[in-house]
Every structure is written in C-alpha cells, then in structure tokens.
Image (cartoon, rainbow, N blue to C red):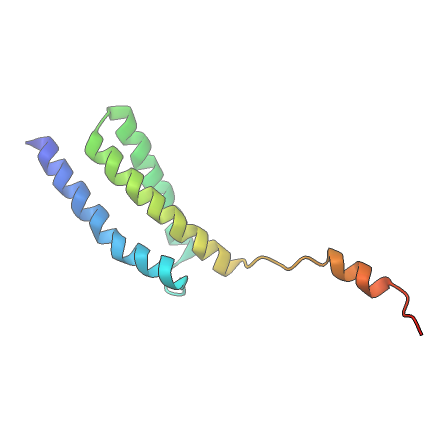
Length: 102
C-alpha cells in the first residue's frame, strides 16, 4: 500500500511538470524562470534520485529520473538564454589584417 501511494505521488508530480517542460522546449522561452531557482531545483531532483537509488525505491527513482531529464533540458535552455554563446572572432582577425589589393 505504501508503494502504491508513492507511485501515485510520483506519477502526479512528474506529470504536472511535463506541460511546463514541453512549453519551454518548444518555445525556448525562459524569461519567467529564475536561473538560481531552477539550478537549485535540478540539484534537488538529482539528490532525490540518489536517495531513491540508495533505498532501491522504484517510485522515487523513476519519478526523479524523468524529472531530472526534463529539468536538465530546461536548465540548459535557461543557461543558454542568460549566457548566449559569443561568436568566434578568430576568422575575423585574419580577414581584417590582410592587405587590401588596389
């Protein structure tokens, strides 16, 4: 009976997270998400996964494995929006230093 309650809780909390994950993955928009909160949330989910693994508790393991995967994708998208990749300037330096033919 306890495992059934754990399974129901795991399914509900994991499924409640899926619509947000789908929205962020589709739109790549994360303006309303706090980077600090999401980093802490993802670390917490990873800790719950380790805890579940140490107990051998399948509801905890499965729910947190799925949530960790989704949260990691969202966190990656958020990080990329906060710290966008800088374009490479290596090619530009060589092109601008070449002599101009007249």
